[in-house]
Length: 415
Image 1 (cartoon, one colour):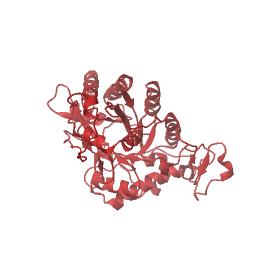
Image 2: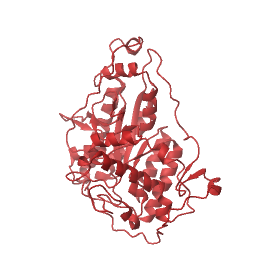
Image 3: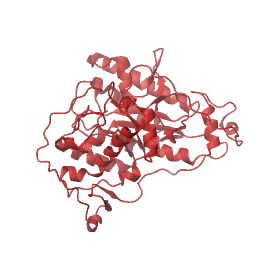
Image 4: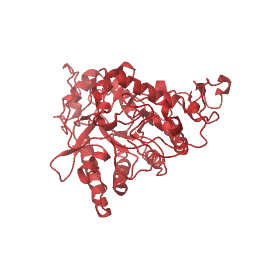
């Protein structure tokens, strides 16, 4: 979740921002873009909010592992909510990614492209029209968010979805049916595809991608409701979901799509593991209340150590992809932002490491021999293959794929 201009930690009971969208035209009508105007920004789609501009830049080549080849160490840094407010954390981490040769996944909340004045266009399943447990952005934050989305895609990163209203807990997304999830997904796409209509900015630059083609997956709020969400996502043509919690093992498919859920990783100095997300570290340290400044350096050090331990366990062991989730928030004095930035700058420069988006990882997984992936899944958390990679992956395996084990999370979950 991403909560603009917020100091409290009401992740699952947030209130809408009381900000004005003065000067925002309704742009009613949703007229299709003039195809003659497509030359400057590609082939315009629909009302001109998006455009096809060709293949996405800066995409890594995809190839099948050679016999006996050690797999790369994939690391995915992902961001829930993905909006740009006055903290400028979206733009900050775009720069960090570029400096580290990393692609990332930005899970955009669809309502972050819908100005507050247009909130009644959103019909959340099981909730009053126009309601949301996160705030709608003000008009300038919508504008800033759109600019970061354009730049992030051109950087080579992925624009996924965090859906819309972020309803958690009792009465939230955990009880949604497949059809309700389909409605939420389709609305999230529509808000991105029709922001020109909803803002009235008919001359603004479109997003440089066809969202129907580019959207590959998402993460549910608070990591809830994954079973029916995956069914809905698969039926709507998405390719992965990242809404649960697994162990650090190689992923498998469920309901026809890749289960790229967050993972349990070590919490150094504790007798339990923690979900690989900033919010979960915070919940295990200070809880939902912000702590005193004196503790911030301690919290940062603990998260740094946890991320590094999770990385090293995979890197020196089974080489399972590492998934790290984050929010554009400065909780506990920015301790988690600094820990994540350190991880990006450190691990993405290591030999045989690829810091990729979830979509790029799904591309790689789809390109592999299913029998090779089955052998990779047999390796337990932190388990290096006996006899080395060349021996383990040299011969053509014959066993059928096995399901990846799922770890039980400790402490609160959030997304």
